[in-house]
Length: 190
Image (cartoon, rainbow, N blue to C red; front, side):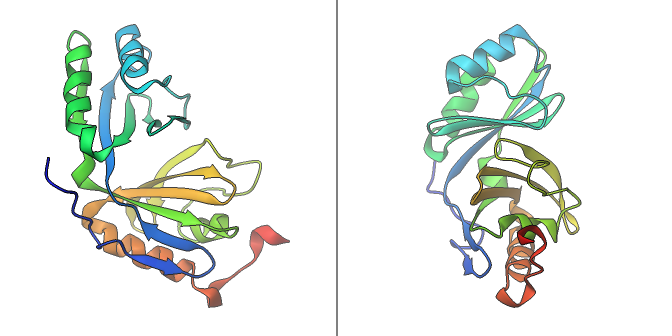
């Protein structure tokens, strides 16, 4: 596999939160019956994680699973191994009704870091970002302004946003505007 080419050459912004484009995230889409024993065992055996519950995430070291819909997961792994892992997973689930695709080069991932990340995302997504409603370990697949995206919190100060690579510039612009120091609403700090 060739070296990863970032959509925005590692763009970064520092405001209410720090925003950075992450380099080299391997991503594999798995479509199928997520309750199927073959699929569950294959994901666990290859990625070392259980399939997360609805709107959940699961991580173990440098691998992860994001629940995207009742029949879809986005599996995370090192970029360099994504093709091989996708091929191995496809082989393991070949007798199940499933689809496995390496989508690493079709997506961009941004990290948001800081105490105001709930506010930054809440300005853009039709999702309740209130503490107690949206917590670390949960995922929302929704939109940011006019484009599809998914996001999750790793902890109270770190979140990641994944979007299509073709709209990476637009999403970075949205996030940067929402994180501009002059745009604080302070909704979650009352």
